[in-house]
Image 1 (spheres, one colour):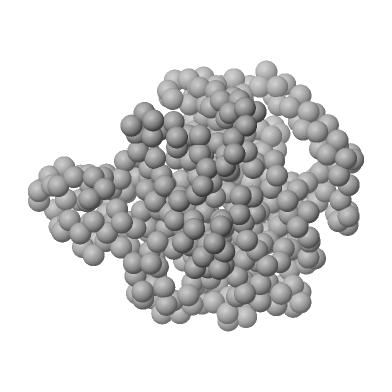
Image 2: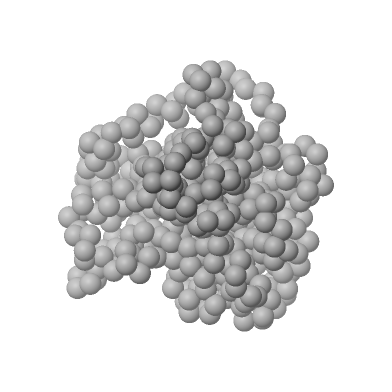
Amino acid sequence: MTDGFVPVHEVGGAPLKVVPDALCTRCGACDPICPTNVVRFDERAFPFIETEGCIACGLCVAVCPGVEFDYRKHYLERFGVDDPPAWLGGVYRTAWLCHSPRERVREAGSGGGVVSQILISLLETGEIDAAITAGADPADPLTPTPVICRTAEEVIASAGSKYCVVPQAKILRQVRRLPGRFAFVGVGCQIEGLRRLEGFNKNLARREILTIGLACHGTLEKEATTDLLRHRRVPLSSVIRFRYRGGKFPGKFQVERAEEGTLDLHRFEYKDSAYNYLFRLYTPSRCLDCPDFSAEFTDVSVTDFWVRNDKGDYLYPEGSSLVLCRSERGEAAMRRLIEGGHLLGFEVGREDVDRSFRHLHREKRIAPFLRWQRRRRAGLPAPNYHLDPPTVSLRDRMAEAFQRATFVFSHRRFTRRMMVAFFFSPLGDLVTFFNVKRKRWVGRRKARRHPTTLPVG
């Protein structure tokens, strides 16, 4: 309340947003902390308060990681580090490149099925009793929602990337009342929501939930999928499942229909086509303010390994993931899984980890500071991560300005749909074709300039 985000209100008043949309990460952490259970979520997953029953305690604002998340405090508490590292990988003890040995898990999951395999193995060995992941809403297959998985089949059913806003932390209201040991899978903002909740709720902190972080460049609004389906003339009512990375690695946006079967929604792989374009049109502006690409406050972080060989092909075309073990607990669990054959892979060094993250450093560690400064100068609210501003060069400012310009069509629904129609047309496919050629050429140059010692996949 003292921050001014939740105005004084009377019983029976209109619903109120917990915090301004420009600050809200939609992580869901404000729901479990509410003592009177009056936080709800609108059709875009923004939380609001049902004023009847609200006691104006302010906890929903106090716990919000979108308003403030103290990097320094959490780095000191978790890793004993006074100065948070500037690079995207964060602090970690060991790093592994691996994949699942089970074909079914690899096919259902993304990046070699590593996250799904970790959860399945921890369930099978009794190290956890349940896992919190993102599945599909039974009533709406186009809306991802947090689910609790207790069996391998439930993990596989929820497997795969979900490039859509998910208020993952809201399910912790349910978890607080359940016995057993849990694993929580989430992206950086969702993990930050969990950490803030643990700071306010000691019972939740004592649960010692194992956290598995997913690297996140930025998510998408639900309209990204519905507009794409409308462009492809797929009735929304016919959809029984939407897959963001279906088929052969690295995958495509796919839809499974009740009678017509599976349909690829674009020609090229998801990262070169669907996600790359939809990111510029439908990514929430709050995602661009986030400096946490690799989920730095977890026990284990997992990301795809996009390094290419000297021919421009992915070094591991069947899919593998880079796993960063940040805590002693996470490292011990990972070593047991590798030694027990639950995961196939090998340990990698700092140079190869840095190679995987370097291309996004400017976009996630420098551009957000420029955005925060611009918002504050305009008198608008901006998040506070308690980080020292980096040294910013003219080249950095030009890159951020160019990045900002690529979102010019994202502000109107008409222009978004117009660009979807262009990018997912034969002419758009031609643009993508030449972009794929360019990326392969750049990958070849990098591989020849900085050859890797990793075994070829």
